[in-house]
Picture (cartoon, rainbow, N blue to C red):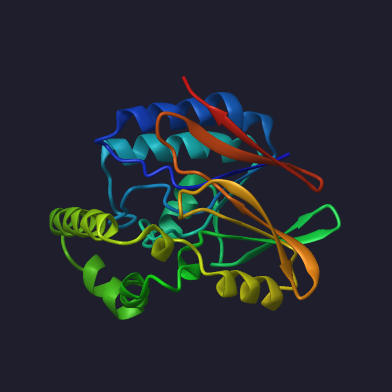
Amino acid sequence: MILVISDLHLCEERPDLTALFEHFMQNIAPQSDELYVLGDLYESWIGDDDDSAFVESTISLFKAYSGSGKKLYFQHGNRDFLLGDVFAEKTGGQLLDEVHPVQLGDKDAIMMHGDSLCWDDKEYMQFREMVRSEEWQQQLLSQPLAVRRGIAADLRAKSREAMENKASAITDVHPQAVEEVLQQNNAQVLIHGHTHRPAFHDIEVNGKHCQRIVLSDWGEQGHYLTIEGDSVTEHYFSI
């Protein structure tokens, strides 16, 4: 069985989310063979050299999972795009490309974080292009940890303010973007997070029935998908 999660937005300021995550990793994840984390695991990620007790505690939970012989995969989100090889090594997981193919029975599917599909949010798309550049990332990572923490806090505050002033439709995926990524990958199913709008959407692409499955962010409840064969089921849990 495969488990899929996204948009936990873990941070020291939200011990309730950390408690949900700990419960998930200790009581739900062990039932699976593979775990996919589709981005925004953390509210922000300032570099693999972050040695805070909070970060180390979350890493240890992943390490316990992978250490039991299970497969662990991560995609970058718009909050934790600086996750790197050191993080992957510490957790025993593998970093995936932005679009990752998976098989659902006889169906070809892809997994994404989903932020690159939000074409109408032109301001964010410009920001995304900037922060995903190697030059920008190297410049940021060259700063001391304390400086990076301040920069991350500033970016989070600006992001919250920007979201409050944007129409809901702008921050959702663009239908054409969804169609194009399904066509380019010859896939019938797209699984993604980012928008915080959990749903199972039936869509038609080039005369073929396709499906877009959206994961929820975590809050009072956690949310995850189980994949068994071609069956995808969503689950909510609380503690």
